[in-house]
Image (cartoon, one colour):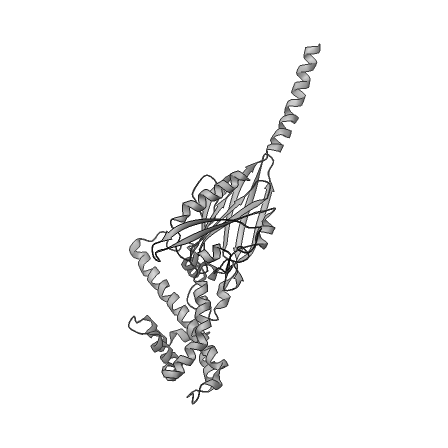
Length: 360
């Protein structure tokens, strides 16, 4: 276990220099006997280090949990001209299931892990092990589905890089595809913003005096955003104009500027503040995720092999907008006990025969 912890420390310190304010670094080490270890590294302040406060954005059940062994490194934050700290928390687990139940990261009060799987297939002299982690589906946070703007493969590529729909295309040919997907993403976000805003207005309708629209009309406007044909409407085309502000889009879709003026707009912004918080939380910076396995790597899935048995993955709230986003690796370990038994089965008769001949 000491060797494993040294591997974790080396990997985490190597990533330290590239840590941005909200970047998290996680390393998972799998052992050949099914046990495992996990470390997470994140920034914190002196009060957190001193134990005066234990809350930390995205980190749960770590700082105030003694089963996580913690170490601290100080560094000078040039942007703040003050000393800050890096906390590295490490914990050993008996199996993958236990590790899954104690996942240390959440986004918007939701543990981001859905399930972890450890499958070992015995093949005689060796076993193939497949390890995977499937994450929660944050697309459910958006009432207007991405399927109104993307095909299934387009959305998956835009969020995760897979499948590679640009394969075989030149840079020039790829540019038009990227531009179209970026525009589709903007439209998807805008549609959800307006949908959620109209829901807030309908839910709080009585607080808007002299509203020129009935509550039923507002709900009809909202529900029209769930119809694919709606986006062929000319009023929606103004989203493609870079000189048009989001408020102009809202006015064009809703049909009135009542909600964009003075105290009414302030009231609406106040009611919608929690929506911005939710969307902002899903935009969590990438988790730099490193997986260390005990055998020969056969497949890295959507990861990158950075060493003989070290794989790096990207995990983020944006990638989790694809349902059941999964990282997966397959590796091979030698069954030395089987090698010994097989050797004995082969060698024992030979040894007996040799011994018998010598006695004669």
